[in-house]
Amino acid sequence: MVSVKEKIAYGLGDTASNIIFQTVMMFLMLYYTDVVGLSPAVVGTMFLAVRIFDAVTDPLMGNLADKTHTRWGHFRPYLLWLALPFAIISILAFTTPDLEGTDKIIYAFTTYTLLMVVYTAINIPYCALGGVLTADVKERVTIQSYRFVFGMLGGVIVAGCTMPMVEYFGQGDAAKGYQYTMTAMSILGFVLFLLCFLGTKERIQQPKEQNIPFAQSVKALIKNDQWRTLCLAAFFLLTGQVLRLTLAVYYVKYYLGRDDLITLFMTLGVAASMVGCALAQPLAKHFCKIKAYISLQVIAAAICGFSYFISKDQLVLAFTAFILWKFFLDMATPLLWAKMADTIDYGHEKTGVRITGLVYSGVIFFIKMGVAVGGAIAGWLLSFYSYQADAVQTLDTQHGILLSFTVLPAFGSLFVAYIMKKYTLTNQVVENIQSKLTAS
Image (tube, rainbow, N blue to C red):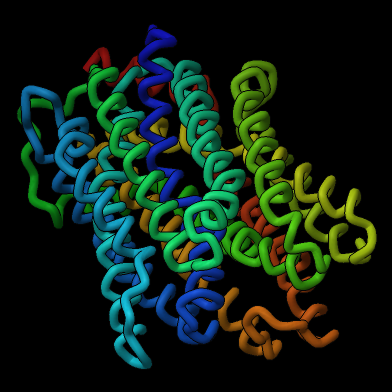
């Protein structure tokens, strides 16, 4: 059994990660368009290019982590080594130098690329760490529930504190406000990563005789059909989710016409996510986690579709729909990440190769591809609907924001539900696999 103290320590690592990830998801597009002054089309293209490059590095980082051998384990050392560089680069990404034209684009492109690279370098080992804390199938869901509850705590901090802190630190200067806000959040993230490093222990080790080339590891990975199913589901899930989250601030500011409610809207959504993540473990205890996951995606899609018919003066209903969407969608999140650990056992039994870091990094590759496509689509759609930064939008633009915020993300969840019908690793199947591995 993994102690509650260790589960909390592991969760604090995701609090640190989400302080940056959620800031990027919720506010980076708005920062680039309304503070730096970049066009949404340029930002969308930059998001796509950088995130594709970043995603390609994921398997390389996973393989590197698998081959890392220290007295602290394979994955924990990276939390210690990279916590400070991650904090520094996060500050630089939200710093606005006195540049013009192309120079602003180059600076944004460079710092955003560095941010995504160092995020990969620390987050891939962190995610893989969750797969080596325990072999117990039910404990895996519990660990991931703790992780995402604390991860969503990072989201609550970002959603609830970012805009007030920008106003407090900036005193009318948004660029200064964002820089100081990210400095404070980065310091907090640095401390939390260190606490995660100190409070966790790797218990599942790779076979000592295993030392195979990268190409052979990738070949074994591709043979894992259950892993491939998760990858495809992760791509469509994040495409729709990121599209909706990126446009959430635009929806509140320009469709609902209440920019004063952005902080409350985002905070309540993340708080609902925390509750949903906390309920994932009891849900998995009483229901098949595969059927539960599919059902939650269908519910999330229905809520998105329904949101299209909410008029701009129905604020309570708009808030309720967003809260319910975050609740049901993120109740499924720990279930997905627990499944990743199960595919490691499945692949080990099927191919004779255990590649923890590569399995997680492979799924995260598709997650980031979904993030890239979702973010890029958001920018392109804003440009297509003639969005003008910090101005009153036309009715066509408002309708475009509404359509993109509601109907399009619904298709992402429906695709995920359909794909997950091919996933077959129930608890009983995984326990049988583990018995075979132990006996061999």
